[in-house]
Image 1 (cartoon, rainbow, N blue to C red):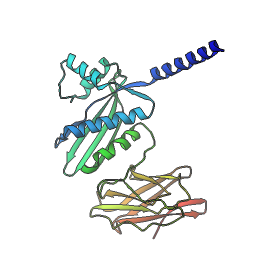
Image 2: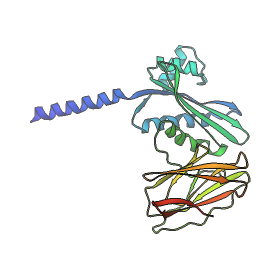
Image 3: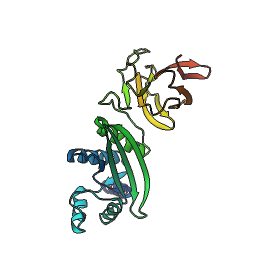
Image 4: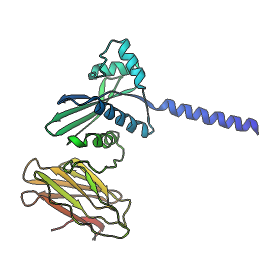
Length: 277
C-alpha cells in the first residue's frame, strides 16, 4: 500500500512538472510612451497588470524581472528598461522566453492610446495586438480588459473612474426585475447607450460593438450604460451579442438624438433587446 501511494504521488508530481513545463514562458517589458511622458510608477503598474493577467490565465509563466535586467546588463542594453521590438525579441530569446509582450502608451490631450502586442521570439513576428483609446484617468483600468481581449479571454469591465471614459457603468443589482432610472443626458460629444436591468437573467452577459469596435459590456442582472465619443454625425451600426442567445444589429441615427435606451423583453422568438422609441 505504501509503495502504491508513493507511485501515485510520484506520478502526480511528474504530471504537475510536465504541465508547468508546457506553459509558455513570457517576458513582459516596461511600456514605451510617445507624446507626453508617463511617470515611472505608471510604467511599473502597466507592466505588472499585464504580467498578472497573463499568469492568472494559467497558461503562461512570466520570466522574472531580475533575469531580464541581468540579460540587459550583460548585453549592454539601456538601463532604462525601455527597448524597441527588435531588442525586446533578442532579450527575450536570451532569457529563455517563447514570447515577449510590449505595450505602448501614446498621450494626446486628455486621452491615451494603449497598445499591447505579443511577439514570437523565434520568428520575430507579432502574434497578437490590441489597441484601445481611453480617457487619461482610465489608463490603468483599461490594461487588464485589453490584455484579456488580446488573449481571447472573457472580459469583466470595471466601473470607470471618469464620467466620459467609454466603459461600462454598472448599477447595483436588485432581487426583482426592475428598470433602473436612465443615466444623465450624454456629455457633450458623447453617445450613450443605456440598457435596463433584468435581474432574473443574472448570468446573461451582453457585449456592445459600435461599427465593429467593442465599446463595453455588462450583465443583465444590472442596469448599465456604455458611452463613446461621437466622431461624426450620422448613422452608427450597433451590434449586441449576448451569451447563449444570439446577436442583433441596430442602425442608430445620432443626428436625431444622442442617447438610446434598450429594454430586454420577450419577443416572438424568446427574450431580446429592443430599442425604445
